[in-house]
Length: 228
Image (tube, rainbow, N blue to C red):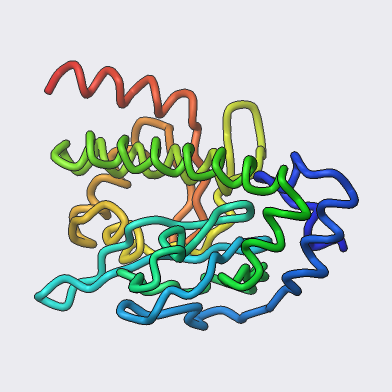
């Protein structure tokens, strides 16, 4: 099953484990703009992202979108599914073609019993997600330039591909509105901050196609943080 030969925890599974997981939990495919779930929907199973990206977004009381996370191959959605009262707290929207492996509560015990290595790999992914959330909380009060810069570095490392020495191209069609929603700011502020990063030779591209010099940007952000 080629769809299970993807980055993330699946790399740590044997050929038999990948094949059996795909037999127990057959994949589903969705298109760009499709909702995997909406805020308030019952969370009755665990979703493993196999291919593509899913944005987790929530609307503020004023109706402004806030992107909480962008999940890619190997990430998990609905991690509180073991709680019978659990509900999704955000919308899960596909940013392109997405393939998922749905693991319902009914299948959890079967997977754990037959494939004990799978839960261990899932715990590793959850640990990385928790670390990311802690980082997000730490920078929540930082200036927009720092929040945007760190978001671009993270996107480049997670979803980018190397296109030159030190440069990574982000394979996501992210509009400036999306970057603003990811950083909790306005489109105008993001436009200004992107311009500053371009002037310093740390960013190229526009209109959803960006190339980031990740190492250089990280160094610049550290210097700016010390000045604040």
